[in-house]
Length: 156
Image (tube, rainbow, N blue to C red; front, side):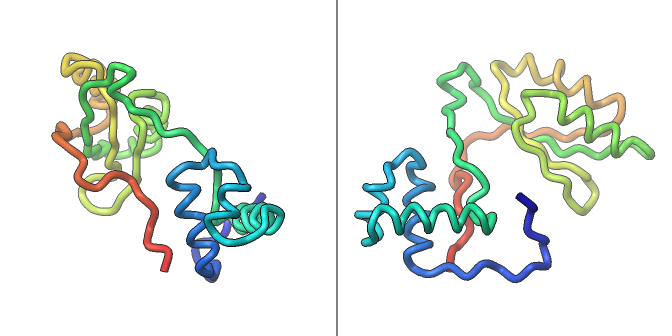
């Protein structure tokens, strides 16, 4: 399935689409029969709506959300990464290969990347960053709390 171009017109969503997306974001494992009841449609109509939202790339995938603390990751860090001259693509490749980096955005400004990583302990930080610092400058902040967790963008 081809990705929508950034310049393509946004997909219009009605109230039922928005309600379905919100319900799936809350629990993507809900049965279609329960989703149908929530949005006031038949199960076949609800399943067709979901298929349409997938074919329009509004819904990209269904996934699982883990509690990193339950897996022993006691710390999160945000790392700003500024590649040394000529190292941009090599740094990007290094970041992709380090599994502790769970998220990374390429951004404008002084830093080229803003990354999130999970750590079992603070001692891991130097070990992980040493894989990056030979090709880039880094600046790290330890996450104290997350007042706004990842959420859906406003749906209208």
